[in-house]
Length: 103
Image 1 (cartoon, rainbow, N blue to C red):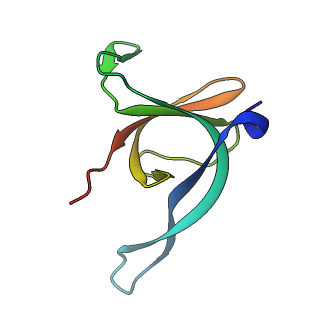
Image 2: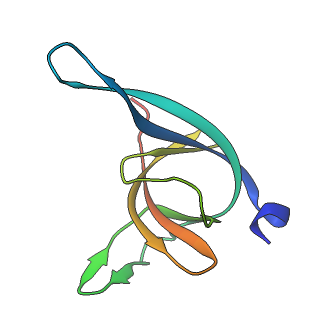
């Protein structure tokens, strides 16, 4: 259902490319277009994850099997979001997002 009716988004995944001569990690960004359901928080919504409550600006539902981590970025139109938490379900992945403000 996500692949058929989802909205086009771009996932920017940070992956370890190599280590430099001092042993420090060198990362590269891999961009991947995918279809997802996207929802913007209306102001009073929160997600309860076990014993903690998460504030978020938006959340996105993406297909199971997509490689995503906290700190990755999702581009939706002109807006850029950072992944703050990930909840894996049997059929999809739910990621909460914080909007990155333009400076």
